[in-house]
Image 1 (cartoon, rainbow, N blue to C red):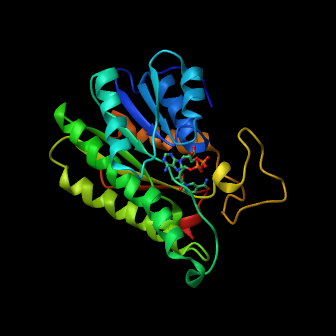
Image 2: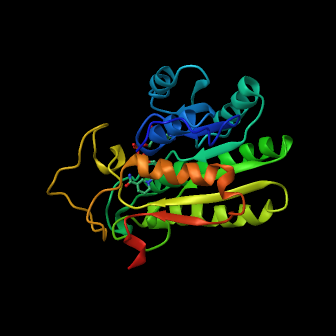
Image 3: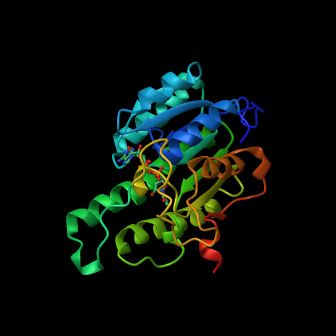
Length: 251
Ligand code: NAD
């Protein structure tokens, strides 16, 4: 993929959650390269590292996306530092343990739903309010193929991601005439920390995911899809769910 700066987000202000790692990291870097000023949000502390890497035009915010006050502060940071909000990438999430449904205890259910579903709701709640103050914007949520099809041993995560799918579609309808577009990417299996990958590591050759392309997705391939939905190139697209999954959901 080219490193050339083409300015597809020139002049825009973006917030990226989960920016410390994986898909969020690749997307924050790409958004910055395309001209956006970027608020990099994460709970890991790695948000400081990516901001140092981007340099001018980026700020770090330490947040837990499941906490209302943290998310409000994250959006306020975009408005205070950069004058508004044009793009919100609600991407932070985690998979949780894999086991049959009856073996999930209540605390794990609450944690998975709090981050993966409530976190997206809170981001949209505060982010869309900010976008409406300046005439609109684009929300991109990270759902998953598990929000589109059932997933053995991942019922709770799948339910949370299914919730993200419906938050996306419904909010798109709520704001369709007010300049706010809401879409989601649905990653298949992508080689990140969530999948067991170390940052920058190559997936083991013998670990081939059950995707028709017979390979893992790369964080950069998800970032490219998020960029399309974030930019004005997708100006007539709202309420869409974009599988980026090597054909997984085409079967
Ligand atoms: P990752 O673990 O590399 O990155 C997730 C980031 O989110 C981490 O930096 C983590 O610190 C952050 N995070 C987790 N909980 C948080 C919280 N409460 N508040 C703020 N930040 C928090 O994994 P990834 O694969 O890049 O995941 C990004 C998104 O993609 C997630 O929503 C995940 O569910 C989704 N997804 C990933 C895959 C995959 O195969 N990797 C597949 C489908 C969907």
